[in-house]
Length: 228
Ligand SMILES: Cc1cc2nc3c(=O)[nH]c(=O)nc-3n(C[C@H](O)[C@H](O)[C@H](O)COP(=O)(O)OP(=O)(O)OC[C@H]3O[C@@H](n4cnc5c(N)ncnc54)[C@H](O)[C@@H]3O)c2cc1C
Image 1: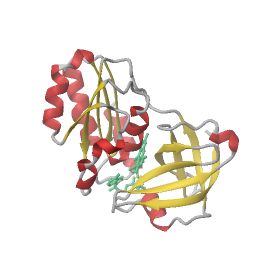
Image 2: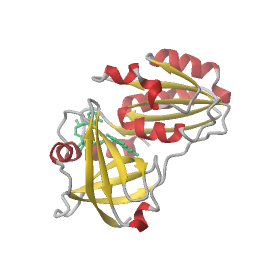
Image 3: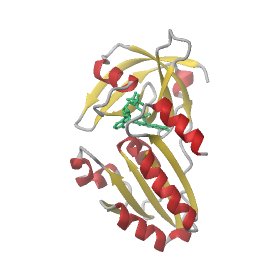
């Protein structure tokens, strides 16, 4: 992937996220899709740039946006988020495509945390509105997000939300052979549901760990490789 550049056009934040909207070349914008990703690049002057992945939450004719979780830990992306201003130029690799999502499966089960919300929303727009969908959402500091969770998925008419991972898993086990399971978020959640997926006979699945508590993304990616 090439190194590309974009310029920040606007910023918006709520309690959970910082939204960054930016302009880039039209030839790149035309390759972007909601639910796809870009890799922000930091420390370009050093031998090895630092890379952090973010999901494209909105792609318009002239700009794109992504949502950065407002986590309080130190990191290259979170440091940048705290200081970014309109007009700043940043480098990125990509865009890359959205993750696998089997919308033909009779039932949909999605599980994730705030980092996965933009991807879950993008996928939800591709599902038949009447399809039965089940959603477990892991919120830590931002309980208000889970209270209004259905509002993020206005197209889904049959959406069941779960506060408890155990009840989500019980439903999933009961309907495994008819279910597509999509999981992304903190490593422990992905690990837990990947273990369960090995014990049951799922229709189809996509499981990805997006970050890991207590370690940088470099360490997280190296842990993922070691675990394979
Ligand atoms: C395909 C893909 C799509 C992604 N999409 C998004 C997205 O749309 N929005 C988004 O915010 N993230 C997204 N992520 C996750 C994001 O890349 C990581 O959270 C990344 O580690 C953040 O980088 P950082 O520099 O802030 O922290 P790092 O330098 O990686 O880590 C520093 C510290 O912060 C902690 N940390 C990292 N992320 C979080 C978090 N979310 N909450 C609490 N603590 C954290 C780490 O455990 C560590 O202790 C995505 C990841 C992947 C693989």
